[in-house]
Length: 95
Image 1 (tube, rainbow, N blue to C red):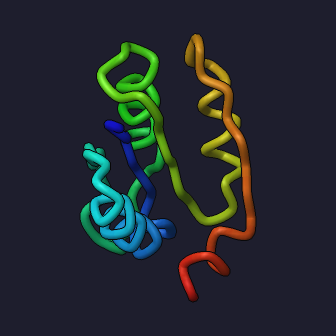
Image 2 (cartoon, one colour; image 1 turned 180 degrees about the horizontal axis):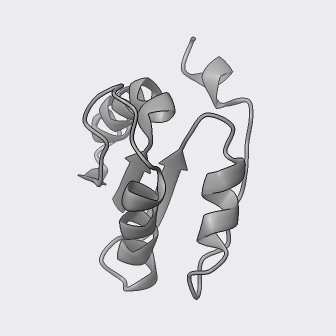
Image 3 (cartoon, rainbow, N blue to C red; image 1 turned 180 degrees about the vertical axis):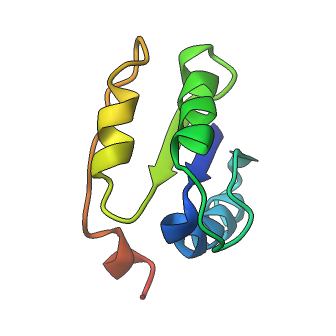
């Protein structure tokens, strides 16, 4: 499965762990950023991630951020995208 992934600086470390996990499960991952923990505005990275899914370039998408609230609300404006917010992903990644 081809999966789009993007995060702001707060989600960067989780994103990198998820990329390794997904690749280990034989998924193809398209990374839309960010590339460090340096502060960045999440809409610049979250929107392209969601648009890749909406346009059929990727089958699924994952966006990560500090609280997930801004990311989820921003995604509601993209046609065919239904955001789902989860706060327990850290437990799954062992952090």
